[in-house]
Image (cartoon, rainbow, N blue to C red):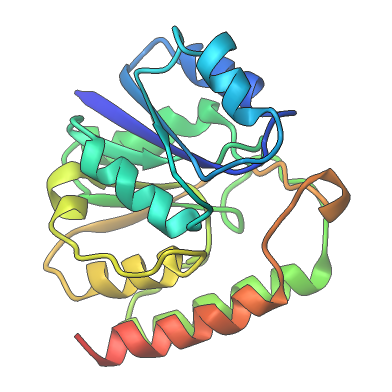
Length: 229
């Protein structure tokens, strides 16, 4: 089974090499690595084009800063694998979790698999209390509208059979991807699983980008894409 790994990135010069190395160290899967640079203004593009060009299968360079959702959509269009994994370019999510995420699909019990930072026994960095509350409230609201029983809707690790994800018309260009895709897969007759993953979150001083404003955008997306087609 070929797995397309989509990596949207923006100003990740300090982590992009390490995350690519970690992905390439996962030798038990056939990989297609697709990096979408969202018009970084640090040295990320230079690193991608010079240092990492032989370690990445496809590099897509956005002509301006569109957002994470837009970059994911460009990656989906370019993906040729049987499955698609969304991988952040920072080091919050460890590729050593790939086997755990892929197993339900390999064993033909799932069409979509969500990681979860809130179940299982894997290690998790202790960080912001109110971020955790916010994530759980957004997940609760999403579950109320979608009738799913997820524990971590906003998680960065999501795996899809390619035919499932490519059939979804995604609209959001920024951080609304998570609630939008969740609402849209909930309306399909597919099998959704969840597995516990390790999580090495980072602080704003370390480059974290999502803010409280994105939480309000997520609420808008939850209502919009669950109630309307």
